[in-house]
Amino acid sequence: MEYIESLRVFRTVVESKSFTRAADIHGLGRPAVSRAIAALEERVGCRLLNRTTRQISLTEAAERFYEGCVRILDDLEMLEADVASQTREAEGVLRLVAHTTAALNRLVPLIVGFRRDHPKVTLDVTLTERPVDLVADGYDLGVIVPYMVTSETTVVRLLERIPFVVVATPAYLAASSAPRDPSQLADHLFVPMSPSLRRPSIAFRNGANELSVPLRFDVASNSPVFNREMVLQGMGIGMVPRDLIENELASGKLVRLLTDFPLVDDCVEIWLAYSNRTLQPAKVRVFIDYAAAFFAEQTAARQSATKVPTTRSRSRKTR
Image (cartoon, rainbow, N blue to C red; front, top):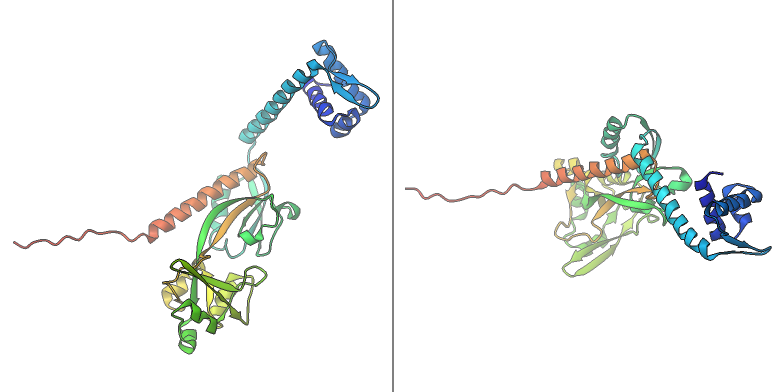
């Protein structure tokens, strides 16, 4: 047996306090474990383990040897992982799950750019709006919103915040009158997200206070796109991600309401989700890095576009 593997076996014997258990862990026979320990003892020139029929114990020399063994093996594993992560080329199939609506205007340019940089990676993309378990469902990564996370061990990274706006059609407002205060929303119908995903209420900040208004509705769904279309048909007021209704706001098909009252939950967050931080395949690692940079650039571009240029106006004296 190779020396490094013998060290691994010795460590397992010490930590499990059992030759039999160490044999099971390493997929060896118990005699092979005994031979590995005997070979180590012969190599270092002293007994490492005291054996009885019921238990084993470490000699004084073995305690020092074990501490050094752990350091060496841990350093070796870190070195191997580091070298592998730097040299292994990103390739293979990357299984990605994404929230259908949140990724609507972002996923295609994200994937196109990623494929351009990493042509050996192919993507199998699933669009859904249900909760997912990345490991159980077999996904490498997710571009998702918070309610979709089902496991506490999932690692998440914030990519973007998309603001909500409260809107209705001019025709609906003409028939029902526009609310001028959040409390007046109680008299209106809404088209909300499904109560199984989001509590059917809307909360506003009014100075230091908060006002929460329960929503009356006849139709709810798990799709912001569906809800937008229902609002456009005059079925009620909607709280919709702004990105979905930019054109409708610009054309006047939809009107923003209660702009003087900030929403408490004023945005939906888009997360990048993966199952662990360490020993990731190269295809996963490079996608994480690319997605983070892509969304950062997109956010910076939008912020730059919405800034109002400042001009200095100075009156000139006529002479």
